Image (cartoon, rainbow, N blue to C red; front, side, top):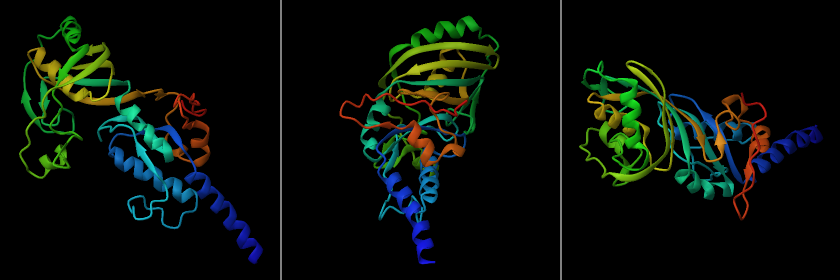
Length: 276
């Protein structure tokens, strides 16, 4: 009997040790709804539970048995690629924050919301019948390159240590952050079926798609908000090739897709063999 117990404990111990020894970056798929922090906590809990940890609650940080972080918040209403750092890979996440990202955004003309997306309350309605595809394409030129952008009030940016979005929900008055320089590498209109339009966006760090769509609506003598947002690429990681879906949140899948840490931080990443 004792031998059988020892045999069953050994694989669990080995799995946990292997999980805790991981160092590098990988990508997961964040679905629409939960926050990026919620998704990360669920990932950690899933992995710790698979490895046999006794109390796989990632929110209890006194003795954190798995060091993990993400490289750039996705709004709760957004979905797509979320880059995760594990072990020493968390030190590489700053590159993800400042690096190139790609998005597909569905915008809706004629309605502005307080959050600049579909989760908020409509605060303004304006005519949009005058807007043509050519109008949008012409205006997009002024939002390409190095531009100045005011971040949304509802955002992960902080004031006195608290997120602006949290302060607003508590009823506090919040002043807009000053405009800051951001970079848009590529910006194209893929489809226009009034009142909806679809944008393909490639941008640098600190860029807010919600602000872009809001500013675009104003530039078109109307208003607009983001109806749907998907991040399709972050750094080297793409939605199609690398993002692990929830059913793939296992040690084995992560081992196959992990970009391991190196001094040069330039190791090639493996493709997710089961991604569609």
